[in-house]
Length: 94
Length: 489
Image (cartoon, rainbow over all chains, first blue to last red; front, side, top):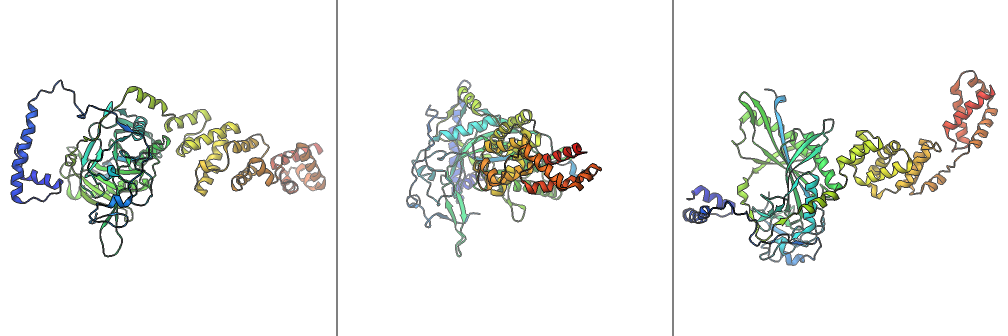
């Protein structure tokens, strides 16, 4: 399956990536190949195969509703590119 | 075509915060109002390598809510990542449920004011984690937004209705009933100020035309921070869509779904952005969380534990205590604690109607005035019940009983002490007769007037009796005076 330029640009927008024109060309081809590869699965007959929700085959893993200590604020904010005494700071959000 | 033929179509998405101590996938506290960024950990900050684990209580509360909404509970539910970028969403995705939600296909019976009861279908109810909070920095010179991630990962249940609502009043009735149900079950405190209940409304119009009904593009209204705002926003949006239809004539599918915000000050909806298509969120199963299977025994156990829900309670109050629909509604809408108070009061006082009247008029008035709830009400139901029994047995008249009630909650006194403090003692029949006889002897003119047919002349003596003994019941005094005069004549 071939990818159109518009589709590449849309995926790039959703991923918040700016692509140069050559990159659009490159990714259109590469994404097309990836989807083609995946499409091989369509050849399998899955009529009698149960749908699978998870690969681990494990279900019902819970924790009790108990409060555990949180990180210190300093530790929580330590990796922030921009911060003040209390909060993460980011470019203005509407 | 007139505006009257246009059908307003509304579906609501309601997020309720589940009442857990810790977050949905980590042990951070969900307590409201703590200093920013003091309730986070590697899981809710989305740090690499951190693994979420499901909070059992959040799952249980979600299942209870689903059952109370008459939903089916999925035998298997799973978790999906909803991908989008926003600064208050540190992982770049929200853990939610896409194709196998916790609960689906339910309904809620609603009671629109002044209208007929109406059943609103529920499409689904699924669990998801909340995002953080963005705050615009007011400080001069910067335009940054500040991000507090305390709320990130708080458990939410998103309840999605079918577009069965046809007016802002019906939307209001649905929300009232939903909130009541969630608070009855202690699934959520539904505190809108603290963001524990949030509403998005999907609104469009069905317009009859020569070639059948035309649907206009759907608008989702966000930022509805009160039920009042929901009503106003729906009414505003309906009018706006009629204008837009007349101007541009766009049909459903000819324009993308749009998101509007409600501006409470300006009382208008404002376009925010074009709504993403579901596929734009690129949902996929979250590999970090395993599915949850639900047994029928578990569901039955929860079903049995639901107890009496508001709709059933309204019906029982009407049949068991002979209350009218309005009265039963007022009591039930105040919550289960108030209903328990009323039932105790009815039992002790021996008169359910009187108990209902007193709760509706006096207790609720005091609770409103003092901004408290029934849990903090100083007059115990047993004490109040004894007071009403005195009225029931004719030992205290209603106006005197109200004085006693006032004294009981103002001074926080027991019934006995309140009566003592007001100097109220039971006056024996003999004492009353003696008093009346004295008054009649001292007032031969009144006797003559009454005997002559001017029965109202006795009023002067009732006033005097009250002055001589404030505990004398005016009704009894009147009766005795008239009897004595008759005997004299």
